[in-house]
Length: 118
Image (tube, rainbow, N blue to C red; front, side, top):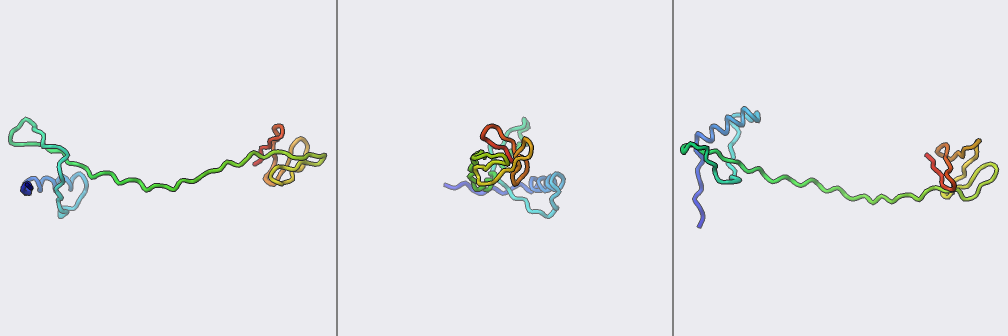
């Protein structure tokens, strides 16, 4: 059996409207929408007054971001070296300038066969 719909108290509606105006900056003519209570009214000790807790709407889920698969690149290594430079594993040619190897992006640091290039 359905419970009869409760009609909100006009004094309560006016109080809600004033609170919305003061706290939220809502216009005076904004409609007051009653919501379901999260729990039964809690007694404040005064039998003529009861405070209520208003339920908040459920949070909207954040839009899911597509997952991006990041594939690490293999380290760059030296393949063949001669007096003027080295061939790298990505097919580039690194020219020797003093103790450094210079590639298309700038100076590379050789740590054994592994290269760190910008």
